[in-house]
Length: 418
Ligand SMILES: Cc1ncc(COP(=O)(O)O)c(C=O)c1O
Image (cartoon, rainbow, N blue to C red; front, side, top):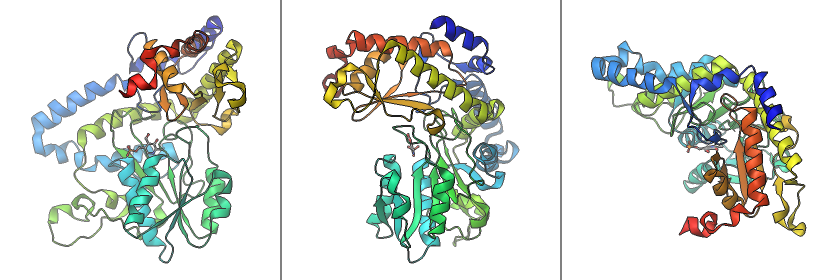
């Protein structure tokens, strides 16, 4: 397997990008879908912003270094990576906060409709943000299983809110079909692109999406807690009203007037002062994704995940679901779609001891993550992963299962919780 992996690496057109990341020795990092790795250029850029811009030019840098426009400038760089126009995307706040602003904006655009439709098991913050507006009496949450979403659309639905790539299973929604169905029912659509942006091609305008949000710290490698981004289709710019009417979203923030007047376009999504250091770090990650190209990244991620599956199948550790009646310990159940065109850049496996298996892998330098109650999640950030990493990770995973290394007390949930 290792020999074949090395041949694949030798033929990989993206292999040279690994050099652009600062990766610790002896680690196979399969968690870039949670926190992307550190681009080598980031510390240098931050040093320049801190010492050169902040340290030397001080407050003048809001203009001289263009800090004041950074949310828009960076939004314009993210835009083509998600199929949007430059003036339709802004980098600001967290994904959660942007969800809140855009759910509230959608409700205001659909008077007489209060239902926000989503699916059970969507990422918690998406569901909690609906719940927050529900507690204020502004929204009603409706959840329908993914196969039932279209029939759950009726004329009470103001907004369909879904995550394009499911955070736990990696399953992809059909953005075009769902957007069309929701709009036919008179609803608006908000896509959470946290696991899509920078990982796979997305065409927001091509599918007629109304709104979108996404994370900066996953596939865009912006660093822990990096700012998020928000998209509003141009046709909604004039009518968009969001409730976090901070001074930075004002038409003339430095007029210091008592009354709020929204800025034009997506700038009205701004709330408070932009976090310049975090935005500067995110810009490095976004530039790198743009340089490599999302299409090439996705193609390689499909090849990597396919190869990992091949290695695991060869080692005999994949068991078809459902497993319960056969005893789970026989192997890992693949919960991600087996067809690579139906999944994002991750593979998820079910096992009752997934937590302990994940910990045992981490102890061996293979970093993936665990999602309760029983999912081992492995993410593929193809800019810095090699086919060799897949072969080695599969070998470690098969060995952890074969030797029951996970059963060691040190890795059990009990010892982690106490
Ligand atoms: C689908 C999805 N939405 C939102 C978030 C997180 O939002 P925030 O950056 O506000 O914590 C995540 C984080 O993993 C996510 O997977």
